[in-house]
Length: 113
Length: 117
Image 1 (tube, chains in turn cyan, yellow):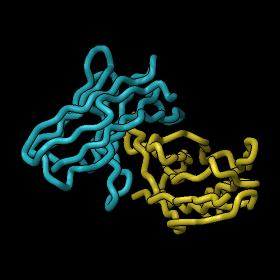
Image 2 (image 1 turned 45 degrees about the vertical axis):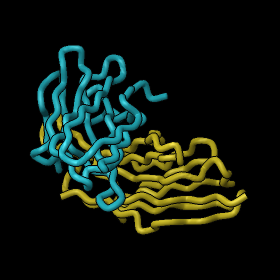
Image 3 (image 1 turned 180 degrees about the vertical axis):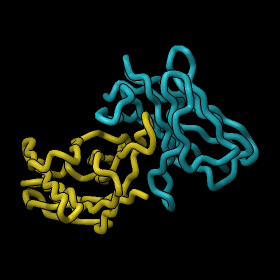
Image 4 (image 1 turned 90 degrees about the vertical axis):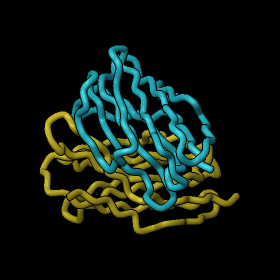
């Protein structure tokens, strides 16, 4: 158990809908990263927050957004969902420095029908 | 831009055989970190090891060992006396400072290891 929690574990929804994925980092970790794992793209970095502020953006679609709250949990919002958004979404947390290891949550498997 | 290549897509070995998973990386930074993660069939990503660019000492942890060679930009992972529980997808990843405070991982495509009893 990495100490990172993600909910829900599975999510099935329809095209055009909006969903919210939730992540709680390990105790003491200030940085949260979101990654998407799909069959064609592999594991790709989406976005990073550090202590409530956006720190970096990767290959994140404009339909996707995220935020980190004062209690350090983070939410990833996916809107106008398309079939191609079906993937495993991981959250990872770290203390925040380059020397720090990112520990991953169990992931949320999103299926868009 | 950074890049991680895992040329072996799938490997099958018989239990108790040794197996080496290859990882080659590209980066322009002098300070970077390399990682290996394991993704078992259950789907979670499990951290195995972290290595910084200034430490080329090989590391051994039980049946696992890692060979880091800057001269060839490689960070290979060897499992000795493989077991069925080692069956998983293994990912090599690279972290470098995109800018201060941003250390996202760049992953390879992964190598699926199947250990046959």
